[in-house]
Image (cartoon, rainbow, N blue to C red; front, side, top):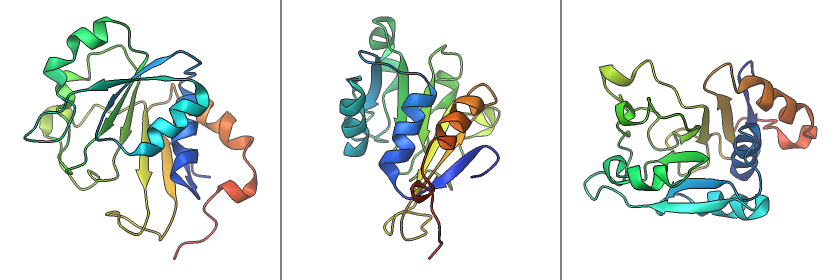
Length: 171
């Protein structure tokens, strides 16, 4: 375990921890891009979360944040940010929302989001580290609290995991 999160053996566990740390329960509506990894949908199904699919900006592959206001107003309990193309989202449009955000930085870890967004952090951050990813340990993932508010929830969940859930070796 790390101070603000943990290195885990698999991506699905990191996703599950993120959903549970945000206390998303059965019937919670989660805004997600249709281009997000299927692991998110699998974990949503396990927790009976409702995926709400958002359109993407064709030039970036990111959720088109200007077009989703109606979806947000209809009742969204969390947002997942994932960029399949490695282009960072426009955080200035997200930072003022009162909705928890899970950001998957697997493809955007080396991207610079711009000066206006440097102070904003997602509530929970996930990084997949498989062989095909920008940062790799050969397997595994990382999950971190983006702020102090979500740190106790993550720590509680991590304390209940068996030792085999953690990334025990680096390749």
